[in-house]
Length: 257
Image (cartoon, rainbow, N blue to C red; front, side, top):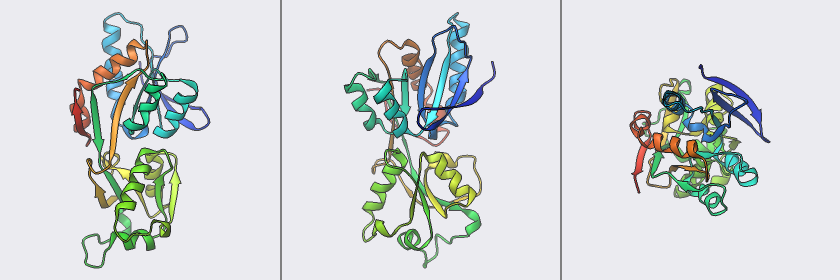
């Protein structure tokens, strides 16, 4: 059955990739960070095909959004059977409160980039270029809002730059990292903080600076809710296909624990 996309609203707008929807069957709903929207669909399709070949009647929905907003939805309403987000640490209180049961035994990392349109022709390697000076004098810069892992990581990065007064930067907040990338691409801002994987197979961007995993970057985690068999099994399936994420630019921080 073909993959379809629709919009729903839970206080904010999310994209839902719905594979094999049936009103008669119980739906497994998995919340996934927007930065994973390029890599999850093939795994979703493979997982559903395998389950159906085994005679299982499965309905799997993937809900893409900002990690902070998805966490808030789970905290208040317990809407999801599993979550795969860019802030593993922020998911831990959901386990403590019983909204999620346990983590799957893998963790992924992602580099954070400050990017601009290539058309701006910024000479990053020149003696006159300073990343601090650019951020202060280069116009508006897009950043994920508070609770968006990419945005939170970017703020840690900014505060670690010696001599940089963050209050002098014209930071414009967006609800998730893909919205940041769209703002840069559309010229609404001069630059933005996005993940390195957001740039895979995308032309027209230049990286001004990069923050590597292991220095406060994103750490992705997957956790399922108690009693959700398919939610837990999809996490196991992802863990068996980590090479799929590596080929897309992610880093395996931990495999099995």
